[in-house]
Image 1 (cartoon, rainbow, N blue to C red):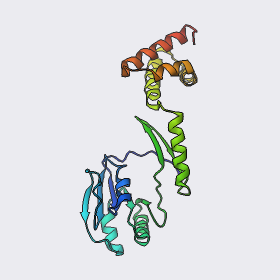
Image 2 (image 1 turned 135 degrees about the vertical axis):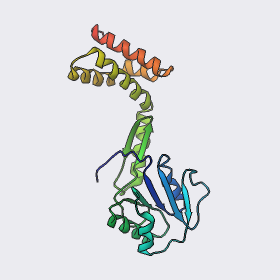
Image 3 (image 1 turned 60 degrees about the vertical axis):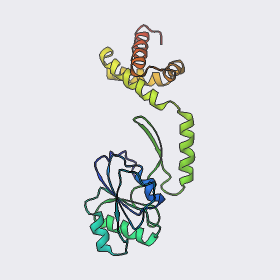
Image 4 (image 1 turned 90 degrees about the vertical axis):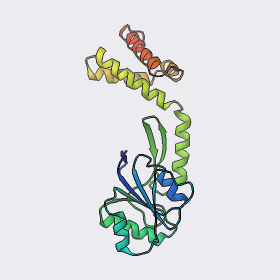
Length: 213
């Protein structure tokens, strides 16, 4: 499998099933066009989901009609055979699919750490979700200020474009900044958002130019 980060906003997501697993899967797609098909729905289904009440059967033709035009199909019923039928129909239609229980689809939802625009995803290929969750927790503990780091590096990158001509040197400075514990401590302690971060980036470049870092 190939790990990808995909923007699913405004894409058609079809979820077959209306239980807790279906609700949890739907939570990934707040910016998408999500339609859920089931005979009953959990009360905690996200409000942006369109719920369609229907009797789910093992009729291949009905399943094909339901998933037509979808970007991603998620099989999340309590019936493994029905889920497998959904996956097979999605494969035939060349639609990406994920299966909560039954024959594996071609999309796996990884355990993830997200801080602002930074996303770290961990997957065991479906073999051991517990291991993926274990690694996610440790990554969160190792990098508690990921968002502040990303904001600072973006500001530093912008400032370097105006100060350093050579791209190779700019890259070396960025990597050096990530390994500077004193600088990172200052980044972690920033409180005034972008303005504070901008000033810190400017000061770091000035110190670098003066040979102080």
